[in-house]
Length: 113
Image (tube, rainbow, N blue to C red; front, side):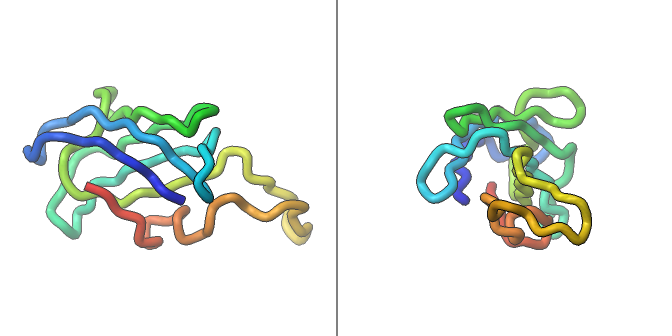
């Protein structure tokens, strides 16, 4: 999965516009939740920001406090496929997930600034 993000400014307190395109295997990924968590280990703080990709993989983030964008600075990225098949426990899914599990947790290593 690849996330292309555009965020400006360097002030840690300022929320800046963030938008991008999410692609999986080079193709736009629709209906994927994108969350940016300020990376506290790198000194960034503020609200989590989130958005959902459209049919072209485009997204715009909104901060939890209602502002458009995200706090400038380093972030951990978490993705969630909203179309992922979720069969009952013990039943195997019929199709493979679009996202590698390493992109779906804060410890997965996907980061941006």
